Amino acid sequence: VCVPCGPDEIAGVGSDACEKCSPGHVREADDFARCIPCPIGTFANSTHQCQACPPTQTTMGPAASSKTACGCAVTEYLNRATNQCQACPANAVCMGGRDIPFVSEGYFGLPVP
Image (tube, rainbow, N blue to C red; front, side, top):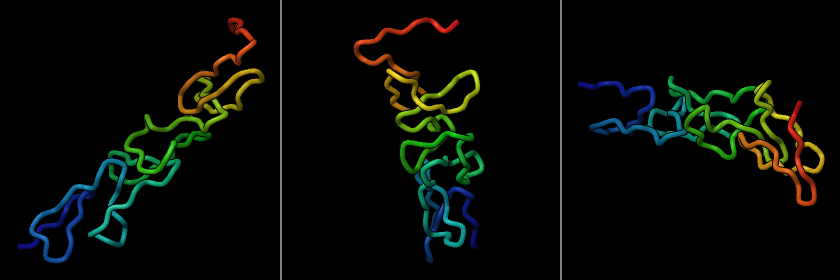
């Protein structure tokens, strides 16, 4: 009796069991025996498909396994009020991801009104 594999599983010809794809990987659309990593800027969602990060956000590499891996590119910061990535302010250092800007050496920060 042949039993189909789940949406996040693969099996080669003659296999007697299904294998789960690694986190951040999905089954290739036309190949039930191969898992592929989600490309940069996407993550593997709960339906085992690569889903795009929110607008202006990306991932630091391929094979992101959840939406929490989405963030800003280096030289940008996540504006938490708009949930959008923005260019790093002058005299600041932005590491990307979900981090806030750090004040550059020789400067100090003032509270935002």
